[in-house]
Length: 117
Image (tube, rainbow, N blue to C red; front, side, top):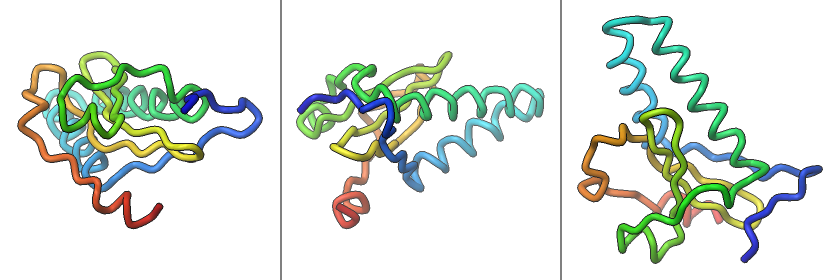
């Protein structure tokens, strides 16, 4: 499957509840030191996610076996990794992690997405 979006029709972005929680946790952690910095990081992450609507193939395919077999990709924004799946008309953002975390220890819940497709 070609992961190039027609520039006149961007793919629809779906941010899962897990990814929303991840982003909220990131913001809370950064806001302990600076609310301004927390909002700046949030905006940069959301901008990067928005770019996936027109360039879903930009990320690398995950090498974690359970993610690789499902075609999960990741892209980065600063020190944060954004894990997503690109389908024909949609991009599903599953998680957002700091790059220092052990990603393979986390559960990627694909059940919700499979119910909506």
